[in-house]
Amino acid sequence: MKRLESYVCGGWVAGQGPVTALINPSTDEVIGECGSGGIDMAAALAYARARGGPALRELTFAQRGQILRAMSKVLHGGREELIALAIENGGNTRSDAKFDIDGAIFTLSSYGELGHALGDRKLLVDGEGVQLGRTARFYGEHVLTPRRGVAVHVNAFNFPAWGLAEKAATALLAGMPVVSKPASATAMVAWRMMQIFVDAKVLPDGALSFLCGSAGKLLDSLAGQDVLAFTGSSVTARTLRSGEGVVARSVHVNVEADSLNAAVLAPDVAPGSETWNLFVADVSRDITQKTGQKCTAIRRVMVPESRLADVSEALSARLTSVVVGNPTEESVQMGPLATRAQLDDVKSGIARLARETEALVGGEGEVKPRGVAEGKGCFVAPVVRLARDPRAAASVHEHEVFGPVATICVYSGAAEEAAELVGLGDGGLVASIYSDERDWLRAAVPAMAPLNGRLYLGSEKMASQSPGPGTVMPQLVHGGPGRAGGGEELGGLRGMSLYQQRTALQGDKSLLAAILEPG
Image 1 (cartoon, helix red, strand yellow):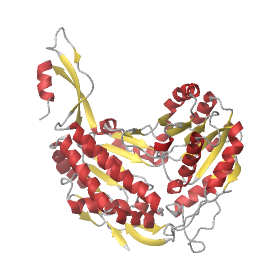
Image 2: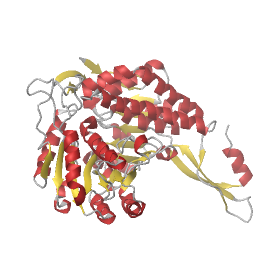
Image 3: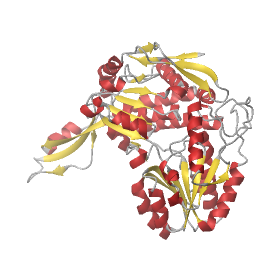
Image 4: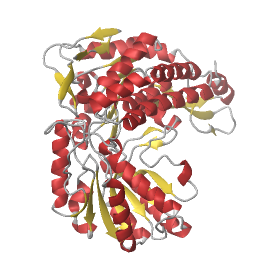
């Protein structure tokens, strides 16, 4: 059994006192433990600020980019080991493990390339300058400089690799040191990633710290130059945002929370067409990939009444053939949920949906998993429910079941009605729209855009290149309004703004130009 340690103040530290057990969710076997008792949280933050911050700010964007590319390279070298740990501790199939780990590798590499493109400069000019006086002797510019604090990242259980990498890559390139805290239950992949980084000596001292176990009083020591970025439930987000230290010292907070993401099928999409096949493949994948444990997974499927029978038949054919069981077996296509608590939450959520919807696929998730001893593991079958009157099914739009579960919502086919139903979710990370009809899309896109952080437009021409709406691309922003947390991550330069201070400069234009030159 592995005992996971934290990496703070420049060294590995074993926590004292109570520990959290890490289990194999396919077998219920305890495979590790972690705890953070006895760790001086204030000292960990102070070390990152005092050592990591100055070291990163001394580097140019190109040099920070080289660090990120080195991190990506060493992770790729440990890829097979990380995949094995994701299968063991996360219940991932090999395909799902690769999705997480390759996403981490790609994101680090992408931000490394961005650093190379930004070149030998240490601060960024934001937008165009403006003449403030009669001549250019009085001129104004906006600049972005790294905050002088530490970025604390509290990550979710479902993407231990990608979650660590996407936040760390953005902050490190911006010039801020990071303290990363994974969810304890699935921390093994993130812990091994940190070991790989430390052993390879790819980071300056204090630039990346790692807290394994409870956050304890970590957030009590945050200050006004610090940043807190959180991914997880909206309930936890409210607690973090209302923390006395966070509020009193105006700590910058970014949240990615619950999201009842929608897929909308337009009436022009005919069964058997390229766009239809893309829609069916995307919805099926999002229900089963990572056992539905994705913040971007499709939870609500808006289907015109004229297409209901065809959609039901297509999804049923796909999902009833999915083999659920121990992911170490080659024939298994979907593994367990990550924890026993997660299983209880999902079963409770399905039962809640069942009170307002009809069964279409999978009933309430009953399954006999392959390769698993009777009564062991955290398994549930893919489930699709049907809401013929979606406005009367409040739970469909109010409660996210974080598992392999989606609900079909019947609508008339009008773009305006589809947007209204999407809006009942009170803000999402991503909505996917499937149509080749430009007039329909002209009505749908502006109506749905304010409700979501990203719109994925599925059509015939892009179908062969699409990774699906559930894949977060580092070049585009990730986040969403309302229920989704109101935050924004990634997006290239846009994501870096969370970790930078925007400052207005006023003075002689030639003097400002000299200051802002690289070097």
